[in-house]
Amino acid sequence: MGIKVGISACLLGEQVRYNGGHKRSRYLQDVLSKYFDYTPLCPEMGIGLGVPRQPIRLITTSGNNETGIEAALSDDNDVRFTQQLKDYAKQQATQLSDASGYIFMQKSPSCGYTRVKLYHENGNPLEVSQGIYAAELDRLLPLMPKEEAGRLSDAMIRENFITRVMAYHDWQNNVAYQLTPQALLDFHVRYKYLLMAHHIQSYQSLGKMLSNLKAKPLGEIAMDYITEFMGALKHIANRKKNTNVLQHLQGYLKNDLDKDEKQEMLDLVNQYRTGLVPIVVPLTLLNHHIKKHTDDDNYLRKQKYLNPHPYELGLRNAI
Ligand code: SF4
Image 1 (cartoon, rainbow, N blue to C red):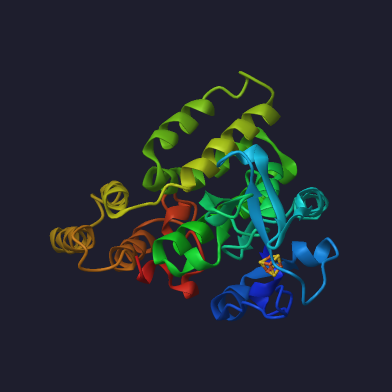
Image 2 (cartoon, rainbow, N blue to C red):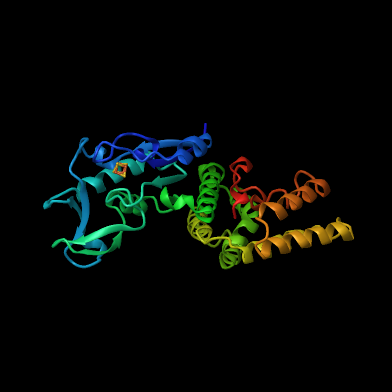
């Protein structure tokens, strides 16, 4: 069974758009479905709007003010669906509490997660906002990683999102499900270098947070931990930060590699740093040396940084 992930139903080819069409994504349906067990949802169908239906849009009376944003029929401001969409998000949040991620269709006044067009009641376009359903789901399930399908065509954003889904799934299954001090500490050990690659400040502060597990009830510490952890992973691991981590990891092998092997490793890290090769190149050699020179339960082998998502997805060939 794959990892449970919510998704806008139109992205899987369901003909649920206002015009009876869909927005099928081959990558999501043919590639990621090998790992993700999708829960397809269409909030507009869910609140009883049929197909075809009149399109809706986001409107506000008070400038770009979150609280004043409403979903209404594009040609009749008085017919509104805001509360129904929020209620639908509440219902779905319960069945999605064990999901590890959500992929939204972009630009939709219901599902859009980042840049949905917002209009003044008088019809003038204002700035951008979040769809009503997506914003409410974000409020109710703040830890769950979320992304828009359109943004996943960017290799860095795609790799970042799938890393977050996998890490959150690990947390749900191996820490939250049966919380113990050891489970929390083991999780932190696994993610040390991944954290360092994404956000070095959180790598430091989360280590400190776990240094005294008696400071507060364990449940509170775990919640503080995972909240900062998921926020940290949202930062993109760029070449500079990855180079730093690769150098740290290589340092563990300094007594195991001969002079030529060390030079080869250094050269590949340098080629990655300067953009000549993707990160998979130095990482493949590093993984090879770690396997050759360490035992199964070695600290390095536990590092999720080395394999944060299925190798077959090739996510690190493109970054
Ligand atoms: S974007 Fe959301 S509301 Fe619109 S058709 Fe797709 S699933 Fe339904």
